[in-house]
Amino acid sequence: NECLIITGSQKFSCYSGYKDNFEWTGAYEDKLERDQCKRLKRQILAIDALRFRNQSYQSDMNITIRELNKAYCGFKKQHQHEEPDIATGKWGCGAFGGDPQLKALIQLMAAAKAGRGL
Image (cartoon, rainbow, N blue to C red; front, side, top):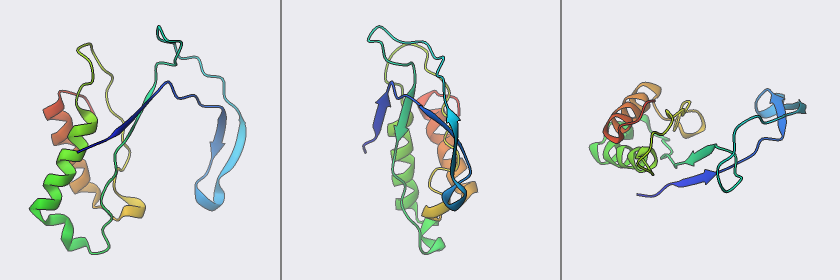
């Protein structure tokens, strides 16, 4: 039932590729506005997903509820003002072995409950 929100993160480099094909392509100039604390108006949400070595575990209701709660914890509004939509990519898939369609449904349900766009 926890997540990590990083506020004001800065990007310094442009890159291309992934894993063995990853390479630096140049410096990055950030043009985002800053808040009253001089932080960039950017937030990064970190929520862990379960790793699935056996695909059949994903359909277990306790596992699904855990993932729903985890996503909701990260997606719920932190302030009363309007917050931006959430961009997650394929959270819990890839190296974690999650089913992309199931994870998409979990994220859509959590975002809807939190009142956020996805």
